[in-house]
Amino acid sequence: MKFRWFLPFLTFFLVLSALPGLAAPQPKNSPVSYRRVVINGVRAYVVTVDLNCRRISLVPQSSNGRYKSFRRFIRESQPVAAINGTFFDPATATIICNLMSGGKLLSEGRVGHSLRIDSQNRAQLVSTAGTPGRSLMKLSDWAFGMSSGPTLIRNGSYTLTPWREGFRDPGLFGLAPRSAIGITAHNKLVLVSVRKPVRLQRLAWMMKSLGAKDALNLDGGSSTALYYKGYFVARPRRLLTNIVAVYLRPADTAAPIVSQPSSPVYDASAALPVAVLPSQVEAPLDPDFAAPLPGEPAPEPTPVPF
Image 1 (tube, rainbow, N blue to C red):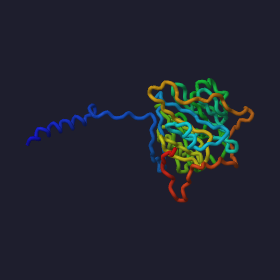
Image 2: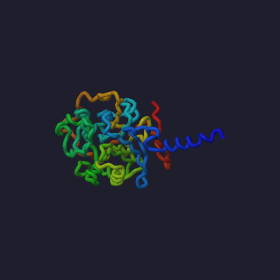
Image 3: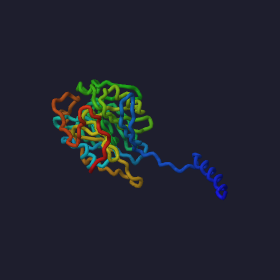
Image 4: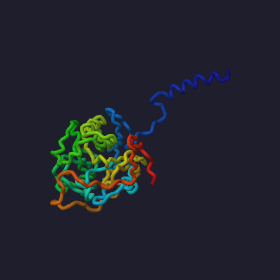
C-alpha cells in the first residue's frame, strides 16, 4: 500500500522519457563511418566520408617507384580509413595516373578521369582523360586529386567508355574483386570494396545504389584493399604503390595534421604512359595476405596487430 503513490509517478516519468524532445541526447554521427550492405546478392564494404566536416582531410600516400605492403602504409600514415589507390606499372612500380596533394603533383599520366577536392572540401569529378597532370589549370587549387577509371557514373548516369579514357587492358573488363570511389549529391565520399569478383557494369550499379552521382573504378583485382579504424576490411594479395588515406583532425586543430609532399615527382613528358596496357609482369605478393583455401569464404575484417 505504501508504494501505491509511486506507480503514477513512474508511469508519468516513462511517458515523458519516450517523448522525442525529452529523450536522452543521442551521439552525433561520425563524419567517417563503415557498413556492410548486400546489393543484388553481392556484399559491399562501404566507408562513408562526410566532406562537409572541415576536419576531414584526404591525402594520397605514395611510394612511387617502390612497393609497400598495405599494412605498412597504414602503420606509417595512421589514417582513420583508407582504400587502395590508382593504377601503376607492375614492372617498375611507377604510378601511371595523375596524383595530386596540396597543389603538388606526385605522379602523372593521361588515362581516366579525376576526382578533385578543393581547399573547401568540395568534391567533383573532372574530365582529364588524355591530359597530363602538369597541363591542368590551377593545380594549386587541387587539395587532393587522383585520376583513375574507367568512369562508372557521371552526373547520375551510367557511363562506361574505357577506350575513350585510354584503357586497353582486356583483363580490366572481366570478373574481378573491385574497389571504387564515389561522390554523392550531398558532398559525401563512398569508398567501396567488393571482394566477390564482379564486372564493371555491376560495380556501376552498386555505386548508384549507394547514392553516388559520380563514381570511378580504382585499381582493384589483387590490389583491392580497405581499412577502417583498426580493421583490415579487405586485404590485397599484392604489394601496393599508393593508397587514399582519410584523416579526421581533432576539433581544436585548425591546420591539417598530415604533412604534404615537399616536391612533385613525375616522369619526363616523353616517357609518360598513355594507356593501361597488358603486362606480363605482376606486382610482388603481399606477405601479410593469408589466402583462403579453395572453397573457403574470404576472411572477415580482422584487427590490425601493430
